[in-house]
Image (spheres, rainbow, N blue to C red):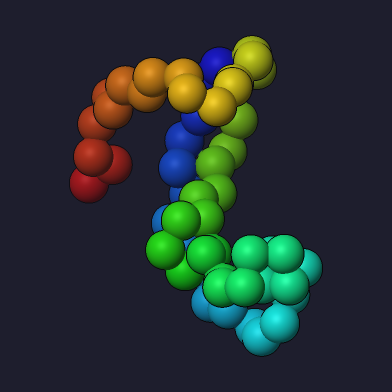
Length: 55
């Protein structure tokens, strides 16, 4: 898969489902959002390659 990171983190809006399960909101620190440029499988533990800094 080829993914483009569009956003890192997200403002926490209170006691969401993640907060209820984990006891902490991880979205501001660990959530990332991506745009799919080429489909494919992505699994936990896969290596990533940074192609550019987007600037």
